[in-house]
Length: 114
Length: 115
Image (cartoon, rainbow over all chains, first blue to last red; front, side, top):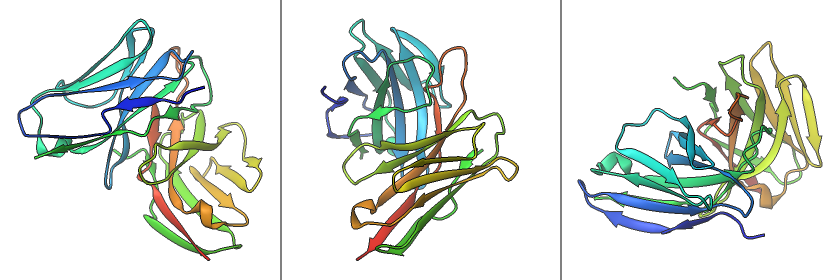
């Protein structure tokens, strides 16, 4: 089975621009979660989608949004980029049923905002 | 409010010895606790978990201990191997009617195994 695939792996943007990141989950997984990793902050939960519906949302401003398509692929968008948005954005998938919390992560998209 | 805390940013251990990584939490409602391992340029990978109703779970060289009264868990790696050098994240989850894919992570501990 192919793992979680995230694109692009690296990107550089300037303040005020917007960015869209893509995530393809493991085949058969219906839940996709997004996390932001920054130095000293660990991984912070952004949101989670299941069957095209947002089920959970973290404490991020409205500039951060996401969606999920019928094939379970997901995108997240960040508008009006700020310097502090520079981070590694990680996508994770799971079957979506109640489980122990075991998630399968992609390699991440590293965003640099200049 | 950091509900899951890893107070040691780094830890160095001699190869063959025991590595002990610690994690504290504040929310007594967490249902599961997990450890993830992360190598540079890779995503985190699941290592081991423990239900809040247990106090120990073992998987090969890895054992997780949970002390609910102290709101503390630890990961023991015995014996430590060079390939164990990575950043280890402690995480916790709450089961809800919507599943429990939301994890609360600690800030990570960088483990270095010295050959």
